[in-house]
Image (cartoon, rainbow, N blue to C red; front, side, top):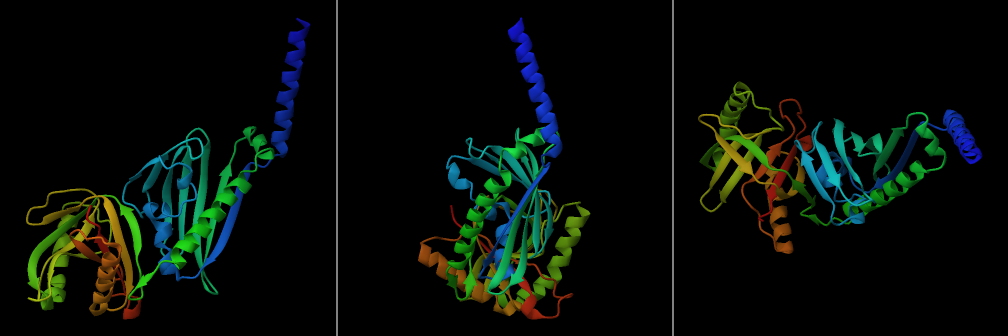
Amino acid sequence: MKALKTIGVVLAMLIVLVLVLGLIAPRTVATEKSIVINAPRATVFPYLQYHAQQQTWSPWNELDPNMTSEIVGTDGTVGSIYKWAGNKDVGVGEQEITAIVPDERVETHLRFKGQGEAEAFMALADAAGGTEMTWGFSTTTPYPMNVMNLFLDIAGMVGKDYEKGLNKLKTMIETNKKYRGHAIQVMDAPTKYFLALRETVTISEISARYQQNLPKVFAAAQQAGLEMTGMPCGLFFVWDEANGKTDMAHAVPIATKASVPGFDIVEIPAGRLLVIDYYGSYDGTAEAHYAMDEYLREHGQEAGEPVWEEYVTDPTTEPDTSKWLTRVYYPLKQ
């Protein structure tokens, strides 16, 4: 009986100690790490915006080569979620994009199974020599569990991982060979759907047909209540330069597969994409396609179909053609 009383007293003292220490222990743990990358913000930002691109430089992926993952929603948009499950080193959890400021900042909310939640951000700023990237993390532990913050250096552990990831990203971007002056990103993308009007036209007609068909596609998408997930696109199935013709579609990306009378639904299976961010007037986009051809030849790869261009910048609101962004996508043949 005396032994039981002694144990009870010790336990009571431990509980009191935890409660007292919890009053002085920090409840919020935060850390930030930065690095300067020798590249413009427009080149760096896609590596932040897309879950799939983040995984190419993640400091944790190499800890478990058998880790499973999936992307829920449209990658690179607010609300999209990256889920993972791995060994004890990486655990089980998910990351949701909560805010995006183009070429500036991406904010995420992290949920770790059995280990709480956290907020994170990745921010870009102009710097001498290129772009400064800052990666930040913060988590709040409820009282009295926050007493563990006195004994675990969470900020230090996360900070080391962040430094590792930032250095990996810097090396990846700065050593990425350019083709005809263009950096080519490689990313894994989920299945994509487009609402489209497909036809064979002469190459000289392309611009005029865009002006005629894209308003029809937009109107059809809105009337059908479809969620559009990006800017207008041109999808190219066949490019016959010798005869001056192309089999193409004027399209908008949509969130889910649908059926709209009088329109085509183009489905591009999940897989690996090559991406070039081309800045300039539309008559210069051919250089981006030639760059893709050079990359494919060098790597012994073949493009699937269709390849497509996404016209990110609205020319009616941006008069400076040097600022027009056309994103060129080449799916790799499986």
